[in-house]
Length: 79
View (cartoon, rainbow, N blue to C red):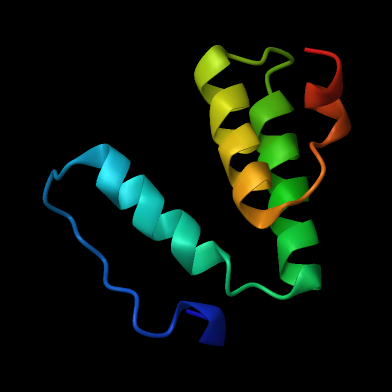
C-alpha cells in the first residue's frame, strides 16, 4: 500500500457495507492530486469497460468524486 493508506486495515469479514464505504472514502481523502486523478480515471475506465453503465457503478463513481471534490468523468456528465 502507498503512504496514503498507512493505518488502514483490511477486513475480510462481512460488515456493514455503508460503514466500510465511508471509511474507505475517508482513506481516499489522503490521496494527492495526481493520485485522485489516476483513481477517477481508473474508475471511469472500469465502469465503462463493457459499454454499459449500471446505476450502482455510476453511484459509486459519483460518491468517490463527491468525497474528493473532483469533477465527474465524462462518462457520467450526461447521465
